Image 1 (cartoon, one colour):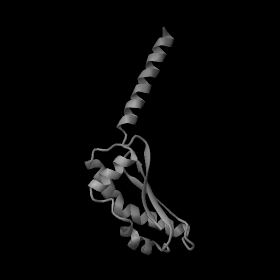
Image 2 (cartoon, rainbow, N blue to C red; image 1 turned 45 degrees about the vertical axis):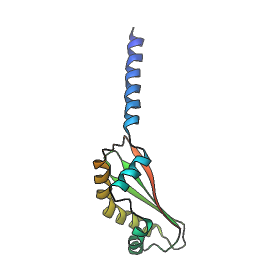
Image 3 (cartoon, rainbow, N blue to C red; image 1 turned 90 degrees about the horizontal axis):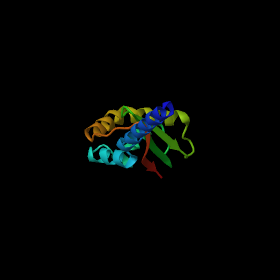
Image 4 (cartoon, rainbow, N blue to C red; image 1 turned 180 degrees about the vertical axis):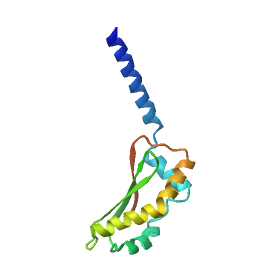
Length: 126
């Protein structure tokens, strides 16, 4: 009987996890919420920040991670010569200062939730 109780508890936990996973926003839904909120922008919008961060012009990707509180952490990866780790870190900080609250507000208005963390591709400089 005890093993049946354990199986029932396990099944209930599994059902909760499945339910939570179905409620979690997917990257496409996050992108749509940001576009609908008017904060997705274009790659050109990042040029002034890139200049301020000291990033040389060239191939860079800008992505972000959304946590369960809908805060964003930005990730800048540049393969252009002269892009130092310090300039990429500064760019991440500038992006967070400018976009974190805007993104969070747009996701909240869209009623999105994230169970753990979600990685989202954003813009690319070529």
